[in-house]
Image 1 (cartoon, rainbow, N blue to C red):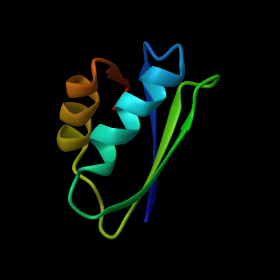
Image 2 (image 1 turned 135 degrees about the vertical axis):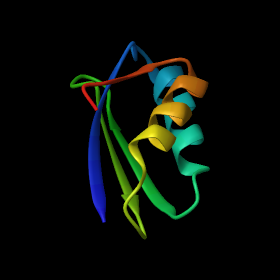
Image 3 (image 1 turned 90 degrees about the vertical axis):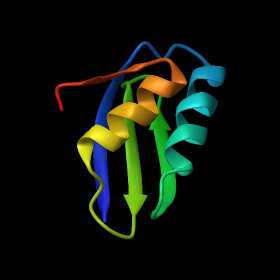
Image 4 (image 1 turned 90 degrees about the horizontal axis):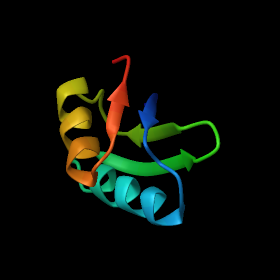
Length: 68
């Protein structure tokens, strides 16, 4: 399953790494792709992800999930 989220505040490679690390640690996540220019994160997972769980991981990385 693939889900795409809009994340605000990412400006550099460190941002990409932080968000990727937090989201990759979620149970069932098999892949994370970050499009820095678009501010988009695509998460591949075995099962649907709870939006609040994704939001908490993005918050932990220091960024904001937009519009979800």
